[in-house]
Amino acid sequence: MRKDFFLPVKVLSRLFRGKFLDYLKKAYDSGRLVFQGNIAHLKEEPAFKKLLTDLYHQEWVVYCKPPFKRAENVIGYLGRYTHRVALSNDRLVLQR
Image (tube, rainbow, N blue to C red):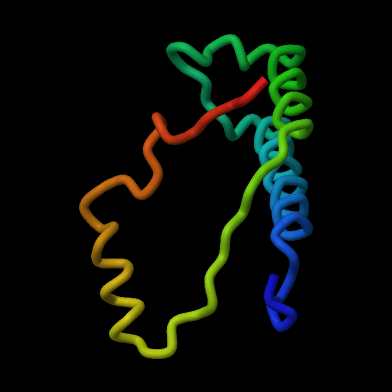
């Protein structure tokens, strides 16, 4: 690991997981989430709490890169993602 890197990946991953799941729970508690189709069962509080518990016990990997040095590089990077999904559902894996 680079010594000048902002945070170790494991620390960053756990911090992101905690923040993400906290905001997800707050959105659920306030009624801002909509569950349809295959995930309709998550409307029920026990099912949603089990999901949060399962997600919390998974190791997450959060990857970050050093910032771009020039605005042209940012535009080029973002341009590759404007007409497609950056992260498709088939790339999300819940391991048990």
